[in-house]
Amino acid sequence: MRGTYTAALVAEMIDAGIDFPWVGGISAGATHTCNFVSRDAWRARAAFVELAKDPNLGGPISFVRGRGYFNSEYIYQHTSGPGELLPFDWDTFNASATQFKIGSFNCETGQTVYWGREDISTQEELVTYCQASSSMPIIMPPVGLNGVAYLDGAIGDTGGFAIDAAEADGYERFVVVMTRKRGYRKSPSKIPPAIYKGIFRKHPAVAEALLNRPKKYNDSLDRLESLEAEGRAYLYYPDEMPISNGERKAVSVQAAYEEGLQQAKRDLPKIMDFIYT
Image 1: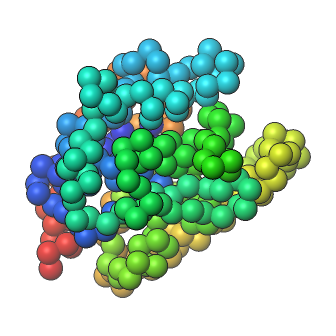
Image 2: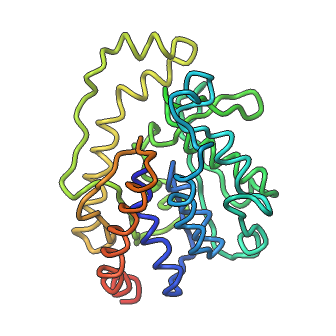
């Protein structure tokens, strides 16, 4: 739920009228992408803060029953329709000229897959791709699409940053929203490789990706910081990150959003300076 903190920035940018010709996201960033393109500041917040109050979100019982510690089936398939917890403005999203990419991990090939506007014609397809982008290994089940299993795109080629997709689409300047403090680098996993290989014996590419993720993530950070030094990227780092990705307590999620909102209000003028100069 670290995306709660950065959801505040998404909401503030929408309210400030900031728009981009291209937006990309992986994992929680996929949700941010959808809310940004649909210009829904309310949903940017509610997708984390209000969802945390919902008893259907998940937990140990959900995990034991095979639905995941976070119940992705419920989160993505049963909250975005009319009259549901997080109604999604498909009409605004679909009418937007903003191009986007949502990244996921193909468990069969071990490759990152990006879906864009050309791949999506219905809201049902969109939320399913977001589910595939956000289903964290081990604690959430993979998502099946056309007979292929997909997991969280953060274990893919870039460690969770859609910078490769943006560059492939021809962009040269970037605003990148981070969920870790400046200076953070991932350490090698303390879990023995044999454990990963045993858990994912049917999908060895997933085990390999988890073992390689720290290097890919750190390499991407090095690349992003080089772009920042060249003046080609604005990297938005949280001052603090008060919650973990596994946080479900509504009070903690609410507090994280409020902290993120304070920073977003403070830093928004700097982001606007980068965008418009």
